[in-house]
Length: 122
Image 1 (cartoon, one colour):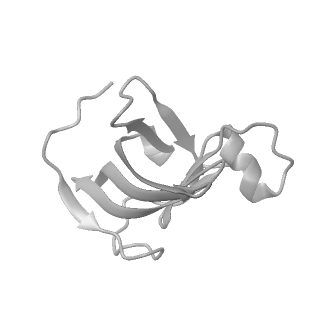
Image 2 (cartoon, rainbow, N blue to C red; image 1 turned 135 degrees about the vertical axis):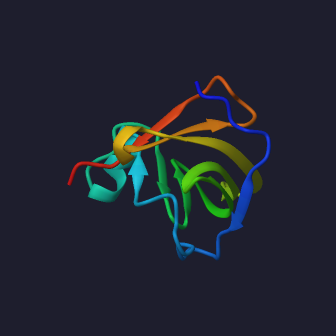
Image 3 (cartoon, helix red, strand yellow; image 1 turned 60 degrees about the vertical axis):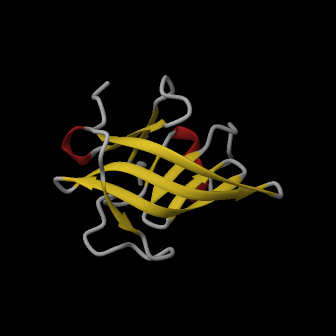
């Protein structure tokens, strides 16, 4: 795993709209997340979706509050989550997959966890 630099250039994300020059570059998901937008029957609770407005999981939505960017690449995501009557903040280090295929997110609180998000097949 590539080390994430300790300092980040943070850009505020304005609500659900994509900030100018948004480094996310589309909608990316894990296999369970790809089932949700397609309308397919979900076979798992393991849902993770990243889009310009936020992160979506099985039972929560997390609007992005800040993005870290280095050399035009996404390096860090901060988001304010809510779900099942609770609110919390999450921070992820982000690593690009080759050729713009997606992102790998690493939760700050669980650095051994890697969430690979790719573009879903049409």
